[in-house]
Length: 418
Image (tube, one colour):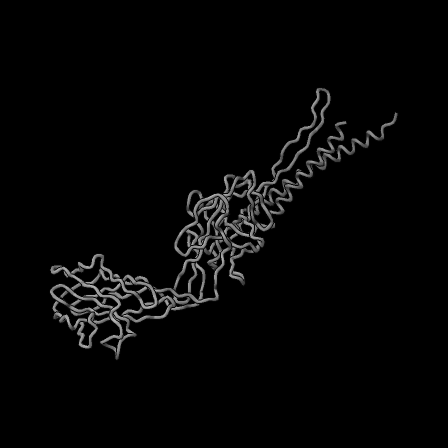
């Protein structure tokens, strides 16, 4: 009899409303969970057997969906390793077994092993990048590894570039060839001298003596020496010049004309060959003066903090201001984001319905940018959830009332007497 079908149908209705109520409870419980995407219960009709002279009521089924593609509000924080994605994409994280997953929960901190982990314990994955390269767009997680930062060691960088701008006096007397610094004789008589501090491969400071000597009309000789090789603070040095060059100046403007481009290549003892930019040198009617003298590189220094750029570059910043890029953070997405499979820990896995994962650099294609010192809030609206809970309660009550009436009708049927 259809009266029993009515009871079954009302039970399915109560079950469906109970599932809907569960999603609201889950949403409210996770309203403060970083990167959480609100769940919703969607209903599907299941028809009963239909006949001309009889009716068999059907039921209702529930499908729970998450609005994974929705962007939560962004909130500023004080931690540079709090990361949010402005736009589409997910962070790639790994569990304890190294299996990759996707997440928008970007509250990362350094653990005792140097890994960046979020509140659920998943490790952020990236691409080692000390040469400025970026993750290439590809399908799958190939080439990614757990990001690990060495915070205990020291870091130093050798000098590779510098800038040295000066004015050479146009009225200076020419130095005899035998007395030029490049000869490295005790009789050397340079027109002017300056010094630069560079760093070798181990971060040891190397003092360089830079000599400028006029050799003729609008021509000068530049010579660089290792100051540690000087005997008594002057000539001769125990070894010859590290580099020499002839400088030429325009007789009208006093601007440097040779070498072109205006740079000196100086091999730093124990280090790299440094390109010293002297394009700003002039020869004017004024005394010798230096307007710029800078050299890159640094002495060994301890780790201070991490810095994350919008393109996903993670750099280690040291106490002396040295900044070294360590990793690039890629972002991942899928053709059908809302069909990703939610898992415990506010993570998502790819499924047949979602399509294969696509990994690429931030700000490439449809992928968004990474924001440091920022977290993405959950997409839960408490007011809407509470309102919907009241509606669900009313629907549950209505279904229970239908069950009660069907039950009463059954009692009438059972108590019928012949």
